[in-house]
Amino acid sequence: MTDHLAAATALLSRSPLIDGHNDLAWQLRELAGADAARTDIAEPLSFTNTDLPRLAQGRLGAQFWSVFVPVTLAGEAAVATTLEQIDFVRGMVRRYPDALELALTAADVERICASGKVASLLGAEGGHSIASSLGVLRMFYQLGVRYMTLTHNRNTGWADSATDQPDVGGLSDFGRDVVTEMQRIGMLVDLSHVAPATMADALGTARAPVIFSHSSALALCDHPRNVPDEILARLPANNGVCMVTFVPQFVSQECRDWDRGVQAEMERRGMDREDFQGYKALRAELAVASPPPRATIAQVADHIEHVREAVLSLPSHYREVVVLCDLQEMSYDEAAAALNCAIGTVRSRLHRARTLLAAKLFDLRQTQTNSAARSRGSN
Ligand SMILES: [Zn+2]
Image 1: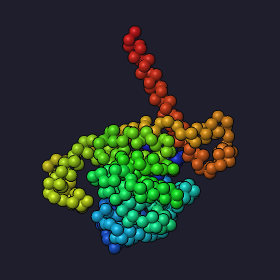
Image 2 (image 1 turned 45 degrees about the vertical axis):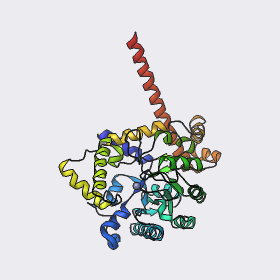
Image 3 (image 1 turned 135 degrees about the vertical axis):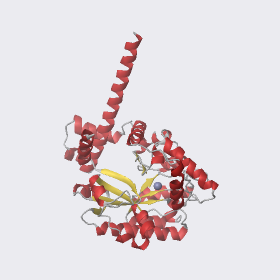
Image 4 (image 1 turned 180 degrees about the horizontal axis):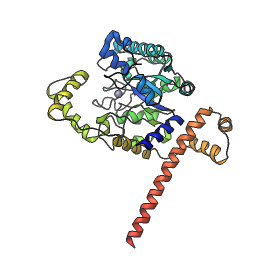
């Protein structure tokens, strides 16, 4: 265990850990309302998974703070509440200048990580936040929002959600305009929460890499929030990223099946499925008679490995970096100049390429060992 911890610590000192999704802002708003800003996150907090001591202990390099608002808010109310959440996160970052700093560019992330602070990015969770307005989208960008998840738990009218009935069958024409405009202004398109048809349409429209900010692999756990293999297989061509989540019912099939029982009971009692407080209370009530199973870290690792398998092919720009740095023994500076990109980009691509190559070689060796064992067995 200590060896694993030492290896993880060494890895984190070389490559910054970037967390794609953190709901602290909404959690504080729900728990403390107008007093949210008075909660001191520099102290250990018992009611949430996040506080500054734990971010430091986990060696977090960068955090996308979600400016999520529920889908029960629509139109101008959704826009206004998202603005309040942006204001809250920006205020929180200002209150802890020794620990957090607002990041607006990739260069900001590299600089802030190197300074030992947590690079703080903003992500909007759900297209309902822009009330079908590209103007609102552009103004969110101006305020620092650097990704938007196309939907939350319900359809937006221009994009179908994974947890709603099919409506437009993926993205509508306006939905495609949203993707194009986001990528034009430099905002990441986040495909967590969206229906597979929306994922496919967005990948068909995208001219820049997309992300999944918090989704696991559908092949290992059949929650509709997870990503199907045929979509994962399209990520290498797009250079997209799938960031695996730790949510138990996305990671463990047993937890998913137990949670399905809670959902069914909510439906039976006529509860709104967006009633998150009611859902939590019902979970606690049902857990008395039938305690929920626990997801494990090993299961999370299985999802990471499955996603890695699906994206194993090496994109061409990684190959370029490997050839320049490893085979021609160029320095990072020289490779950056040759490829006309930042040194940080060379470093991160080289690191990713080496990881992918190492994984590929390991798999190859496993296959050879297995087939050697099989042919020995048949002799
Ligand atoms: Zn979410």
